Amino acid sequence: MKTISFPSDKSDEFKGMLKSLVVASPDHGYSIDQVRTGIKVLDVIEAADHALTLEDAECGFVTWRVGEVKWRLISNEIIAFVDAVNNPT
Image 1 (cartoon, helix red, strand yellow):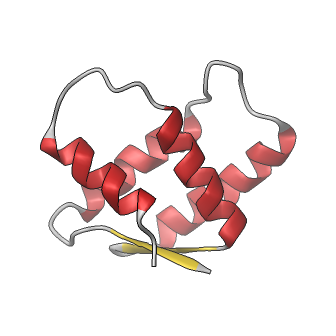
Image 2: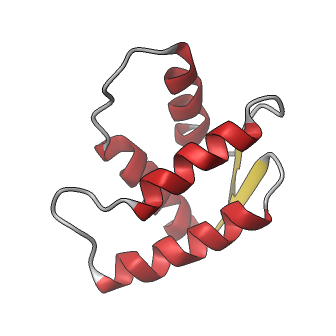
C-alpha cells in the first residue's frame, strides 16, 4: 500500500487533475487490465480527502499515467502535482 498526499488547499484541484488523466486514455489506448485498474483508482479518488491510499499496482498505474502526459503549459502547480504523485509514502 502506498499513499499519495496532496496539499489540503490543492486537494480538490489535484484530485480533479488526476481523475481527468485516468479517464483520458494515452495515445495508444488502455488494455482491459489497465481499464480495471483505472476504475479502482477512480473509486479511490472519489472516496479520498487529501490522500489516496492505493495498492502497489494502482500506484504504479497512476505514476505511469502521470509520467505519460505531455503538459501544454508551464506551472508550479503541475510540478507540485507531479511531485506528489511521484513521491508516495
